[in-house]
Image (cartoon, rainbow, N blue to C red; front, side, top):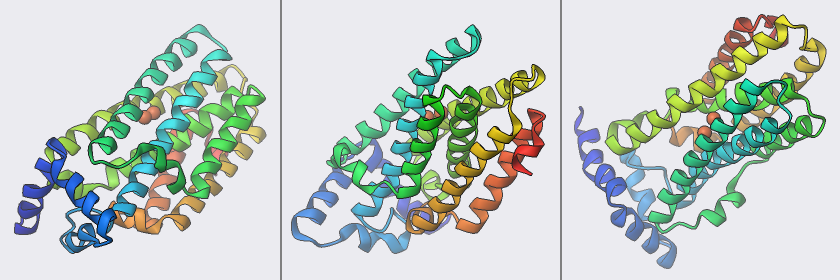
Length: 262
Ligand SMILES: [Fe+2]
Ligand SMILES: [Fe+2]
């Protein structure tokens, strides 16, 4: 490990295990307007300001809220018992992720209630489009919107990004891996369920393609709207888009629905 990362590890790891240090820094930051967090940013110790820190958390948290709402609602109109059972289990896991993110933020002295104000327009669009699919009880649309696109984006961000944070904190690394493993299961459920429905002629390909197209517009919108958040995670927008597109195509290919993301 390089000197920079060793130094960062000395600050970040204890901060996440015992958040008093970051809490103090954030408190000074907001009380006197001196951006201490920013002063540490060139060393990649953390995002460049407490506001950016909030915005990073806001987008992970909003993803969890969308997935919690989607899995809970979809369980109520699932076409089979196995899907319903799985979605209720997924909802439980999303609730755990959400509570953990909120708890961590609270430990840093930052108000989880303020997070909503930092969420980008495109992320809100994810929720709106998925909610519309749920209102028309479009199960395939819900799977594509939440289990493939939103959860797939989370996987790409967790796998491709957060490398500095992972290097600098064992606790963050363990938490991200814990979330990541759940999200991989959630995408796999979406992929397997789409295959199951496709084999039974339950997928209306034109409607599914339309749903994916709208979700993809939000992915592109998110990359345009939160370049600083992506930068703080060590992710380049164009690479993220290319990786997401490839990842979504792989999921649809497994489900025998290549045409959706052609
Ligand atoms: Fe989650
Ligand atoms: Fe999930």
